[in-house]
Image 1 (cartoon, rainbow, N blue to C red):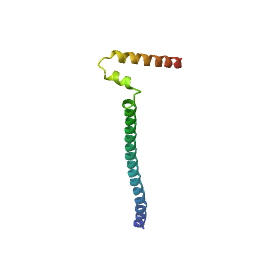
Image 2: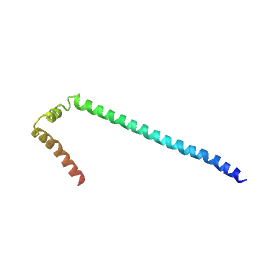
Image 3: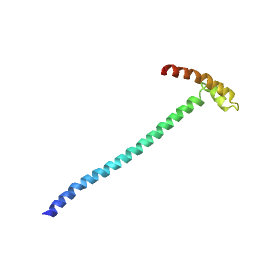
Image 4: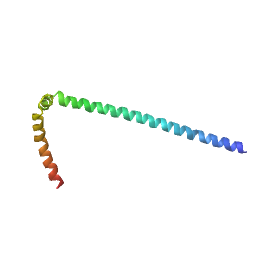
Length: 94
């Protein structure tokens, strides 16, 4: 009689083990898809950044400053752009 009970337990355990194996495979597949989609989204962002920064004239002055050898003009640009932002953040925090 006992061998019949152990056979029943074995047949009961097989679907459970299969379920856990399939669940692990599905989790790994989901992780792979997530990573692939994340890389694709990063590539899209980088492409968009490139288009906006290098292919339009909106940031032409900034590109020229970054390519120049002197840092004086860059420092002046940073001062004129950062100073108003610091004033806004100080006024918001008080």
